[in-house]
Structures are given as C-alpha cells and as structure tokens.
Length: 363
Ligand SMILES: Cc1ncc(COP(=O)(O)O)c(C=O)c1O
Image 1 (spheres, rainbow, N blue to C red):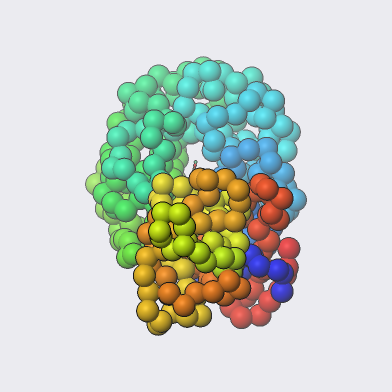
Image 2: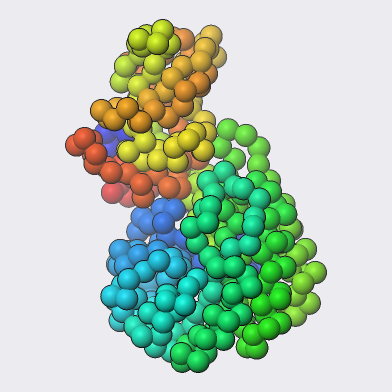
C-alpha cells in the first residue's frame, strides 16, 4: 500500500464504462483521450478492448508507444503543435491529425505528408462545467475552405471534429456540432469521419445526464442530419476513467483561521492532482470515517505554501474531523494523476490498480 495520498483505479470499472459507452453508441469508435489518465495499465486495457487513442502531445505519443499501441491507432488531436512535434509523431506512425488554422494545416502537410486530417470547429455551445472558451476550433464557416485546402496540400481531408466542453451537462449541445458538421459534409466531397468529441459528464456530487441520455441525444441528432451514417468517433476521457478512481488522502490539520472559519487542510490539493477544483469547477465528494457526525461548513485547503491552494470555500464536513483522519475522494480517476506535480517537494500522486477488489499493480 503506497503512502497517502494515492489513487486507486479499478480496471473493472474502466471496462464497464467502455461497455456502457458502446451500449449507448454501438456504431461509434471510442477514441480515448489519453490526457484524462495516461497510466499504462489503463492504456493497455483500453487497447485490448479495441479503443483508439487521442493524444495531445509527443509525451502522450511516447506513453502510448510504451504501452504497445501502434501509431495508426493514435490521433494527434491537440490543434496546437509545433512542426517538430508533428514530425516526431509521424515518425512513430501517427497518420491522423486535428487542425483549426491554415498555418496548422500547412505544418501538418509539411511534416506528416499524406496524413488524414480532421478540422475542429467551434460553434457556440452551451457552457460546460470546465469550458474551453474560444481557445480551440475555427468558425464552422471557415472549415469548408480549410478542408478544401487540405486536399490541395496533399492531405486526406477526412472529417470534422468538435468538443462541446468537458463535463457538459446539456445533452442538446451535441446536436449543435452535428448540425454544423452536416453543412460542411455537404460542401466538401469525400469527408468520412465525424468526431463528436468528449464532454460526457461524470456524477461527482450531483446527478448528471447519464451516458445513455447523452448517447440518445447524439444518436437522435445523427439520425436527423446524417441519414447515411459517417464514421462516428467519440473521444471521451472523463467518462472512461473518472468513476474508476478513488483518491485516498488524509487530514493534516484542522484549525480556526484568522477569518474565524474552520479550515481543514488535506495532504492533497490543487497542485497534487486536484487541479480541477480551480474555480470550484469540479466538486468532488469527500468521504470520511466520521460521516454521520454533526457537520458544518469548512474551508478545505491543500498542503502547499501557495495561497491559491484552496479547494473549496464552503464544504460541509464532520465537526469531529482530526489530523490523521483518512478521507476518500470519489470519482477521481480523471484529470488527477495527469495534473499532479511535485510543487513544494510533495510527491506526485501514485496509483494502485485493482480489478474490482484484487490489487494487481502498484506504480
Ligand atoms: C481534443 C479533446 N478530446 C477529448 C477530450 C476529453 O474530454 P472529456 O474528458 O470531457 O471527455 C479533451 C479534453 O480536454 C480534448 O481536449
């Protein structure tokens, strides 16, 4: 058992999450977003289940290669990449890239000749819990010209991609992207792939639309706009690994702050892996051995010397909590280890892998 804090990933839950996604959208290819949790046992399991992989960097290309994954199964989905990074991925067999600008397209043509490309569009989606804002994607109206240019540059203009924003709580969001894609498919002959991205939410401390509800919304929109189904890709990260992870940490200190409030300090915070608590975007469920005792709101903070390392300003916790008490954080399998840093010299988050109840690996 590693010292706290550590993450436990139940590979059986990863497997059942993939089965649930397949059940909801049987015709879709699952292209796992490696950034959510790039641990080798997770990648190997997903490869064995027939998933493809969305990589965001050459580091993620290397992690996939180390897990025995062929470059042909990878898509370099981050539109932001240096020419040398494109070339690096190309040498390792990556033949599918996403772009959202003419310059990005030209860099792919030069460094990954003949590759398939998907144009990422950014229509206005309803805001998600962790939104992308205007960071990625082109105007849908610009996609036709860019994809036409792709063919002129010797690339294979293969498809349209979008991402409705991570932890998207409005299932209707996908319809917007699919509707925009229809117009582009009509204008650019030969497009084959429609990548409807990630964004499927995880139930942290509240109920969210389930995989079935989102799957139905996507299937309905596809039925409406694509009577002849293209090659549909979903690119989930959170929905594959989020619910598979439980983070075990402990209380370091409980004190009354100079603001008169109760502060509970944990041995993990914003920099140790709970980066998604920024702006309190993701509100994890914290469980303690003292649940059931009287509760009151506390400020919950991480252990580092940074003033921003505060997770929640108001979180109900048992009044009996003491230093050394274990705390479990549910649904912490996505975007935790991949964000974890050694800031202040605290060790990066380690992971224990289990298959339902049997420990199989520690890394
Ligand atoms: C290009 C791309 N695809 C897929 C994902 C996965 O999104 P999610 O974890 O919300 O499913 C992300 C997340 O940032 C992304 O940037």
